[in-house]
Image 1 (cartoon, rainbow, N blue to C red):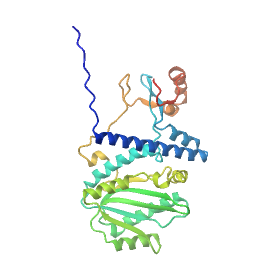
Image 2: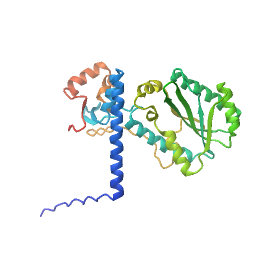
Image 3: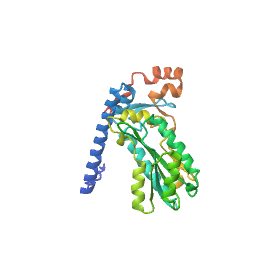
Image 4: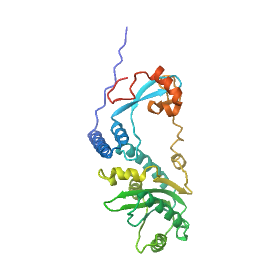
Length: 311
């Protein structure tokens, strides 16, 4: 006598869950529209490579290959560009978690903002000038009590200048505002500067500050200046740690987070660290070996396929 397996009934969503799902879907649709608007702007500037990478992101699947058993399959494409609203959002969430964990390790959590005067030259030079100036103030006695923390640099384009500043989430006792203001003004050699110091002691303040500091900068740039913004930050590190938290990782700050040792696993042979994107094949395997792969393994398989493509 055969027995039938009765599937568990699907639990209906609550009103709150349904509304949350609807909001997430709407937010994702908005991010896709913004991503494609960025792509069009890059295309207008003849940067077809970036435009195509943005258009492919989460709207196509890429060919993946296992170098061990030569198994091939398709996975959702991610461009991993800082200007991508979808990819940068995931990075921002990871940074928020990192900064919240960092705050729990700080005895005197403070958010310090140091701003450059309106920068009318090359923004890349402005970022370097900011870094150099912050390095100087970190050696100043007004910063002697700052033990370490994390920083992020914001670069915002305006019609005739760049607004460049640094946020430092750090462990610091009381810092006199006037002394910091004066020290920063002397370092920049200008009459007026903008500095800000605020406490991050409460959970509400930490939540707001971590979200604010972790956010991506492309939103402030806007569609019309996204290409200029991309060129300004290309290859430049805008987020990092310093002092006693230099090179700290999330698992160093949060005991509940296991150490990351993630590797992609081949669905056929089960080996780890053998999966690569076919478009990177010539760089990973070398052109000679890749030519053999193309003939023997890849054959007529397209590198990019629509999202609804079935293997």
